[in-house]
Image (cartoon, rainbow, N blue to C red; front, side):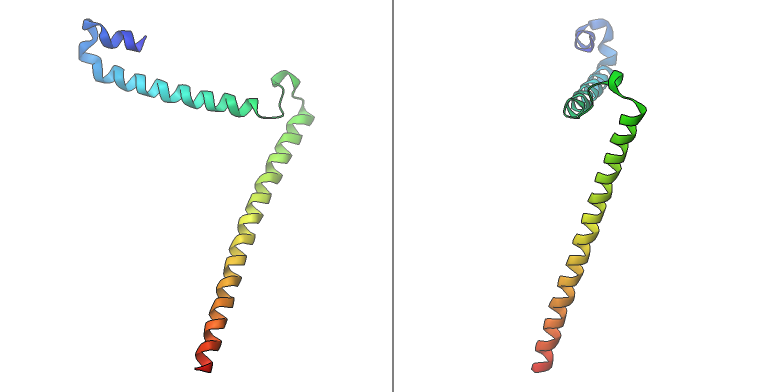
Length: 98
């Protein structure tokens, strides 16, 4: 519809606004498509199949996944700190031997 409006002489003064709306509409459409695809790849069969128990289960799983990710980041940071300390200790030993 916006493509048609862009070409109608009556709306020539609104060409930039129409173009902006068209761009926004395309972005929204792409975002909605992405959400739909992500929903297709979940274990949820549909709203009609969700019960309080399954909602809690999905929420608990999501929270556990987020916690696992947070712990992995924390572990990686600690490993980096340990490696840095070991490297620094090795340099200190070399400096003392020199």
